[in-house]
Length: 171
Image (cartoon, rainbow, N blue to C red):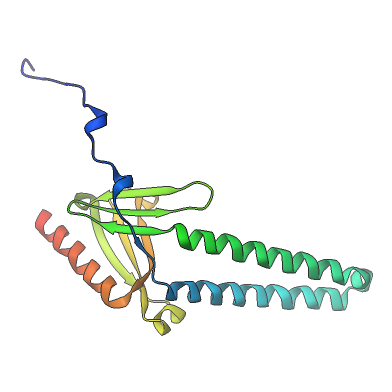
């Protein structure tokens, strides 16, 4: 223990992740989001219409339900658009960066030595647009896993190969 040192680190000399140029999600992923919103609000709209039709006490307030429905749809569209624009990712020499969030921006930085598993997922709608989602599983549990949607399938496969190569080098 006589050789033990614990010198302070100059935090001003640390590399800044904010300076990294992040890749945006594919523009076609916005179509996937719009389709998901449309299906969700179609189901909600049908349910509201059925309720208004069968409950006589609220027939006179149908316009209010319609107004709230349209306002909620617009608000959802607005938030999803902002969320889509703020998402980004980057693969650096030693780590992965993923940024997301609307009001509070979350930036996950995962060193390759913590990556345990990588998976590609193609949803029904995403497959139509030739998109995939890369899921990166880490040693830290669910809260430290990252799922990056809206990547071209070919690029997602390249990312998976890159990460699998990094995992193999560690073993």
